[in-house]
Length: 403
Ligand SMILES: *Cc1c(COP(=O)(O)O)cnc(C)c1O
Image (cartoon, rainbow, N blue to C red; front, top):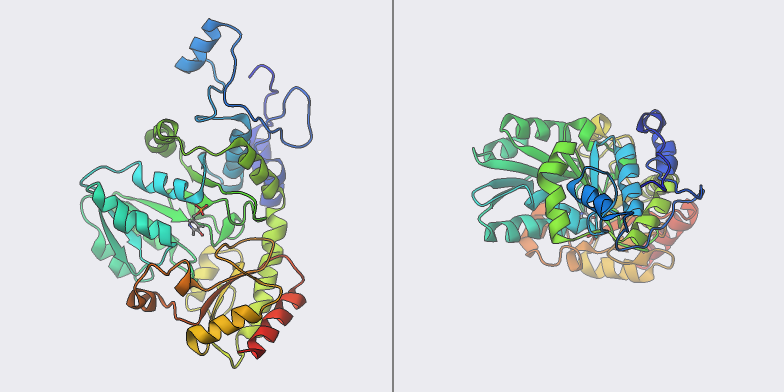
């Protein structure tokens, strides 16, 4: 790394507020002194001598070896995420699911046991419920809101607790500190999927979690361009459980995607703040609408876990959940009448997006499993974009007229 100037000291960046860390954290400037982060599209690296090459491989000399293991642009993304989240170490992955799978699976072996909240992203549930048992790792799914269920599920061989909060798509807010305490009392770790809260509104490590995972595909890119994921934790967890797994199995993030995500992070605070304001305006406009049977928004005083929201979140959410009265037919009529909001299964984008979970993200579940999670046939997951709130609200109200 002789051509790379020493990075800005970490202490200087960590004294800044999150908005500032999002713009400057983790920058590795090359000898050219570029303003924007450099994009190192390279598979490998060359060495001044065979001795230098040997010293890099033994770890005696620091530096990059091969982009499956590490790359300067990917390292900038990891360092910026660490600066934002207050984590000691991070590893970027190709997708959010690669991050979840590595964080959950890599530290475990046959005979271990996992407890997870049953309300979670469909693919995460598949990893815990279907994949782990094939390798002799048992899993128990609990109602994440019920602390007694977490406690009762603990066994001597329980190694990992896993949850998502707010949950997808019904926006329940689980008590991260209380579940972390249950995990630690039983000698286990807590992994939190923090996608729905975003790093702006919730810091699971500060609340007691041991590991945080993100799908960077969502708010961190936030502009519909690329997939990505990241695992944040202690140096020790990354060194003991994640480093070798990723290095040897290869679900690495592309430097090009890391560069897009770095540029996404620069505007993350602005976007998430506007999206949250827009989601609040939508929740306000629809909460008492005669064609809306039920509305859930973590920023409202009538949210069922409003006390937990106040305790652990700094902002509401960019998402709103609501049930259109009249089931699937009414929900489809509503979706088809929207002109601005786009029908999709993604979330966290600059563009306002709407999803019908029962026929898309949660279609794999049986109707009674969906009912248990509160996902009715008329349920809509609304993801606020950064458009003008009045245009978004007008679009939703006009579409409800068609129902
Ligand atoms: C999207 C999502 C994932 C998976 O991320 P990908 O980048 O699509 O692989 C995991 N967890 C949550 C909560 C998500 O919303």
